[in-house]
Image (tube, rainbow, N blue to C red; front, side):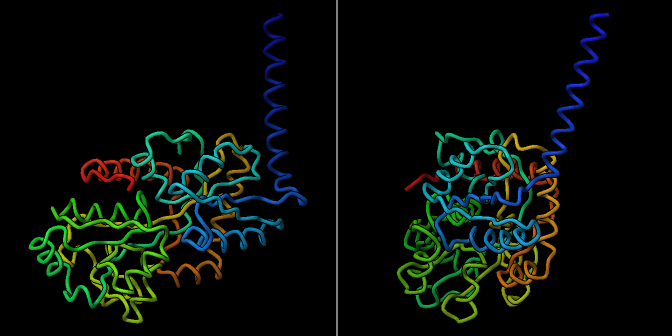
Length: 327
């Protein structure tokens, strides 16, 4: 009899907890409490380019302010560690990127773990990388011609990246590993400085995102030899894909995502997921993404979670094979 009574009390408590969780989700977000998106990179970068328009759209949909807080440093790992310690109440969210699947290979003593401390919500968008060269320093007009020159002059050519451990860095290392080439890596602190020196002719080439390089390709300041996607990109139809240029298994994109803090009520995560999907389908976001050569995310939460594991494994293997380290 006592056991049945305890069981009954337990069921009541479970039901009460479920009711409170649903009520919490229904009252979220509170009208007088803004949401915070932690961006672990400095202002003006690619994560801002995706995160801030999304925040504005979501703010309009949810009817509450959304603050994007830039906490850059150490390849996005400082901001990620900060976000991991935030309260899981649905008022703090993490804006991350492909860089966070690379970080475990480059920073062996991280104070957070992507899978342990965060819950994937959605990929916001992805942008294919493009192999761009300075026209004056690199007269070659095809990837094959460029690789022939590199083989004849190992180590003489160099490539800029937005910093050690970034997708631009590992895209260059993947190019080297796949084709048994030696190019000198020159890391910069961000996309702006790297592109500035490339345009000025201080470095030879870069494996940048199409979003970052597109205007300079159109103006003729940079020459595009191949886009690292499985099909040609609208607006750049004259640029061959990597496969068309003779590169096998060279598909690289920088993608950007939104995570919840682990422990956030599932009902709130589901609500945010629905709102993000609605935002990505809006005319304003669609137009902005297209202007950056980006594709909106189409993976559901479980697919996103699996993709994170795949990317983490992939970049770990590239880092090991290439010996890539923090410079």
